[in-house]
View 1 (cartoon, rainbow, N blue to C red):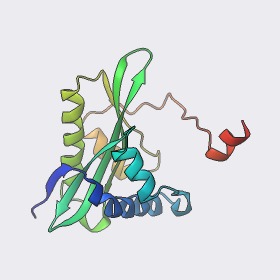
View 2: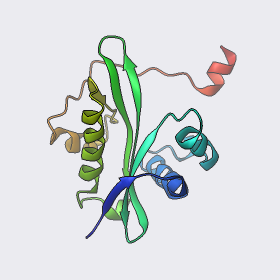
View 3: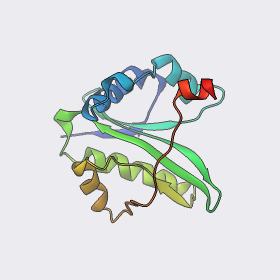
Length: 155
C-alpha cells in the first residue's frame, strides 16, 4: 500500500474535520466536536496561524492526520505539542501512524525544541502501546486541567 505524507493544505480541511469527528466517535465523545472548517481555516491559515498538520494520503484520499502546534514551557522553553494523530479505522495497522508521528518528530528536531509532548487517554491501550514502542515517557504524575468556553464566559 502506497501512502504519502505531506503538509496539510486548506483544501484538506473537510477531510481533516471528518477524521477529527471519527476520532471523537472512537473516544466516545461525538457531541464534543464544535470545530468547523471555517475555524480551522482561520486558525491554520489565517493571519494568526496557531497549528500545523500533516496528512497521510492514499489514492487521493486523506486516511490520516497529525495536528501539532508550538507551546512554551516556563522551565524548558520552546516545545512542540502533538494534539492528535488520527488514522481512519480501515487503514490502521499499516504503519501510517508511525509515519505521521515520525514526521512530527522530525519537525520538532528541526525546530530544536526542548520537548515534544502529547496526551493519551488512559484507556486507549492501542495508543499507549504505540507510544511505548518509541520508549516514550508516559507520565502519570500530571493531571490535566481545563475550562470550557462556557466556564470562561462566566469567569
